[in-house]
Image (cartoon, rainbow, N blue to C red; front, side, top):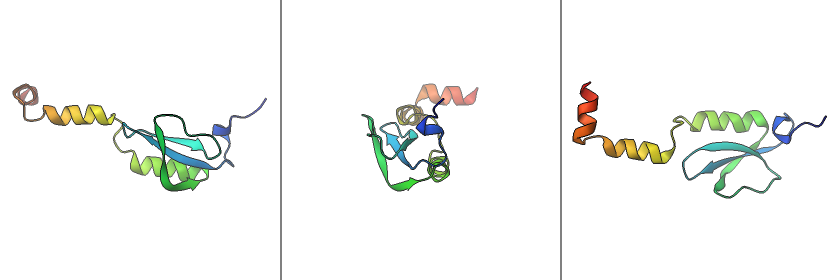
Length: 84
């Protein structure tokens, strides 16, 4: 039975980020999928890549949701909900 490249501890990974500020690790030799871009200067073993993601992806909400929620602050409906 073969092991996925994502499961290998000896693989070299890069870190990807998409337009929603969501992160993923990716084998360095695979083409970066559409909608994602490599984070500059981040390449190493699986632990290094995962440590970077853990330190930098601190809010799991998609960027569009964070932006929408921020826009709701200060509106009458948001103020009413905050009082509940």
